[in-house]
Image (cartoon, rainbow, N blue to C red; front, side):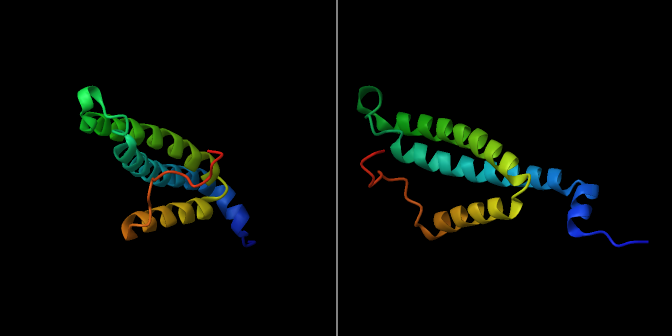
Length: 113
């Protein structure tokens, strides 16, 4: 009986599909958190109805979280099908920046944006 290579094991066991699902869930969680943070920070920038920006911040957190959930989930699933290690690295660096306080959804320093 011959030994299988890593590539053959992944194809036989369906590891690529599992990696895609794992990457999609991991990315969706990060996207939800990132979107909610950005929406909460910038949701009340316009002042809101009658100058109450807290309503805008609440809506921004919900909408930003929902948009982040969908977009990051799709990205993680598609890209994670063949590149699960890279998706995990991206998500790990995101969560590290959130935990240590270096994730700041401020304005861009690039004037073209």
